[in-house]
Image (cartoon, rainbow, N blue to C red; front, side):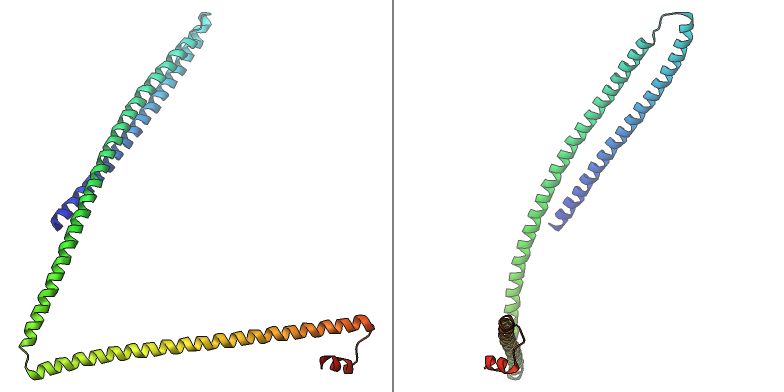
Length: 233
């Protein structure tokens, strides 16, 4: 299946390259047609200028002026040439769109097939992993049966030590976390108490300021220290 996926991916890359080549080919055709149009326009302009010169020379000998007729013919010829090239470009663009659509559909089909194969491989790998784990467990049990008493005791002791170390580490981390949470709670309580004290101090200060302003407003002079002490009491 891996080989199939690799083959599909390489086929996908080939299709994308082919699509780029087709786009490049159409771009070259468009540029070539544009160059042809410009060349025809230059030739037409040169012919028109030459014809105008001849008409000016001819007008000296004759009163008839055929230059408008030649201009109409030149204009119609340029329209026909432009229309033919436009039709050619339109046909090439439509063919390119059809090829791009076909290649896009093929790429989508290849992507779907790749995903399907990858899912199949993943399922087989999972099944192989389960089988391998089961086989390893069976092998381990067979090996354990062949251990003598000392080897079994040593293995059990190492297992027990790992379990104790793991439990001890968990307990230590739990205690550290609880201590940190307790510290955070104490800090929050201290902050709340400081905030309340600040609010009370501000309220008392504002109250004393109001009393002082009221005394100044009524008495017209600063109250004596004894008056302030009585009011504070």
